[in-house]
Length: 273
Image (cartoon, helix red, strand yellow):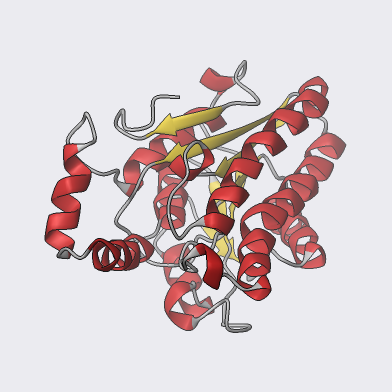
């Protein structure tokens, strides 16, 4: 129970079967009180119902957590809402010790010449600006509390390598590498570590959509696409939600006190740098 007495916020964690839910459950299993946060309801074309966690989904996850917690809807594109999320953690649970920026858009995938300004802005606003707003809001509270903290972004293998049909996504995830390197230099004096976790492909609900998209792009079946994917991974399989959750838990623990500014691969050896 290494997180007993600590409060964690995980954005983008309201969708059943997603990376966010896995992270929430891992932190809760180790004693953290967790604020489950997602956008709650579709706001526009960039946030369709099929790709987000609803308010009902968030409440269902909270109701099943070992260490309890609360649900708080937040559109990470809005810094005012992000600050309200941080304030809720303190008001409802007494502190803010862990912040995980997991919210992301990985379902706007188009050929380079078909990407519109709205497409580009939607991905950057959530994946990069949303992570910055979360980092900033969490750091402000943690500095005020005066006892350090842990901030982790869920980046991607796309933070290290490029992929077709993923210009905005890849740019946003590469941006997170620079963000943590810079933030770590400022927040170390306060005992706050800032890191990225960079998983390779994980077949969540979003991952299943990506499988179908890229299989069609390559002109193969989803089964064949997954066989080819596994063949290039030294460990012989794609990632699981629990792989990412375990890495997050490590970086949030006292065992990682001296690790900051890093972008840690969780890719079964597929991404070695």
